Amino acid sequence: MTISLVPLLVCGMLVAAGVTLLLERSLLRVLAGVILLGNGVNLLIVTVGGDAGAPPLLGRSDPDRMADPLPQAMVLTAIVITLAVTAFLLAMVHRAWQLRGSDEVSDDTEDRWVRLRARRGQLGERVRVRQAEYDRLVAEQRAELRGEPTRGERMAHRRTDRRKLKHRQREARRQMRRAIRAERERQALALDPDLEGDE
Image 1 (cartoon, rainbow, N blue to C red):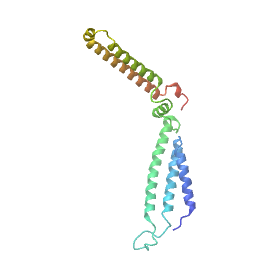
Image 2 (image 1 turned 180 degrees about the vertical axis):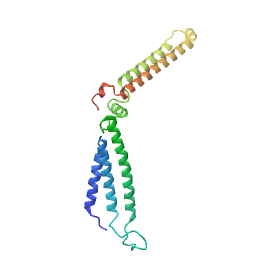
Image 3 (image 1 turned 90 degrees about the vertical axis):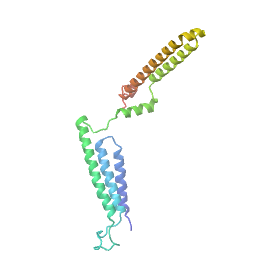
Image 4 (image 1 turned 180 degrees about the horizontal axis):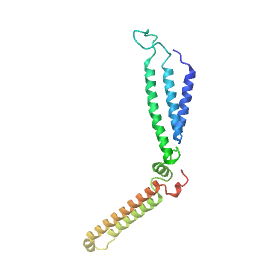
């Protein structure tokens, strides 16, 4: 069995063009990429499947000259799947055009959040400052407890001091969590001035 190089080159060109178009931001180009990629793979399966032969029916054709039915069945299935994906993408393009007047895929908040983390680390500078303030407050409160002068005073005020300390720590933790949540929401909504112009 000999395989011509021309269909293989055409398959390679179709697959390369399809993959290139799949990486675009326009949904119409993605649709064209899916179609080209599907046709390139179908052509590859048919080409590698061998030469055309007699119909694969036992009793009618010589078994040595029969065509292999498996590549044809696979290509038929692939055509149906490509048609379904094409219909789905066309519906997405139509809906995007109705809603936004454009078929460009825009960044969502997760994309912006990933970009921001890659650029500046996990948390914003304000959250780091709030964390440092909280750590400093805890250290000061521990030093306060250790710095009381006499054992008698310590015994008398131990329970109230511990309650106050725990209450202040809880309040500081709440404030820190609120600040982290607010900072993450602000960054996720792309209200950070560092993100302006990153569309």
